[in-house]
Length: 274
Image 1: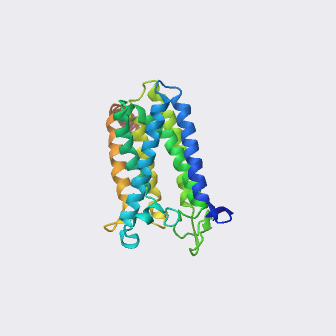
Image 2: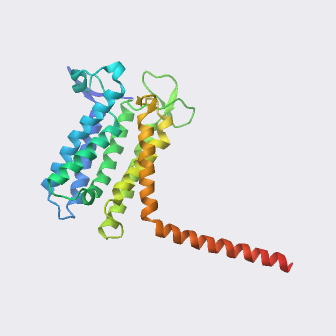
């Protein structure tokens, strides 16, 4: 693990900070490339982006402090000095960011559900790059394991899961899936907002799947905040897809039912003939 990438005298360049900057750069670049294909004004979209980012960082930090109130207390100086007292709730970032996004879109007189689909690929890319940074800096450690894909984390005993890398891979896959979904939305094959629900489904599913492999958890009233929130979000997104694709599901079920009964009746008739 390399928490500090460079040192110039008293100035320290943190690995995680470098990757956060890279995540921001690539998210902006991909968003710009996608928005160029639309009729949205670039200045409006980037205004919404930076407002959402500001509130995402604030709420992410706030939820982290609330969950760790016993040890950190609520000291404004500690809240601001993120290098000295590192920590951020990813769920808090997303909730705060989406709330600010909705309000900013309303102020710009843009339909939030129409625009949000264009943000999902770049958001997944930012999360994926950020997770690589958290792994290299040793921030996101996993539980103990003897699995061959395991590493030693500074300050922790034994070899541990590279859980941040697992998340990063799934987020890169999520970015590709959301981009393909966005293309279908532009062709009017899917309704506006489908990429958002797909983002929620993939993100919450990833959090649920890998939560037990993480060493550090944010707890509130004895419950893992990330896991509890992910279960709720996964259920809501899953219900949306079941409802939206209900006709396709019913059709497939009827086709399977007909095939199954035909096969059973054929087998029964063959046994009777014998």
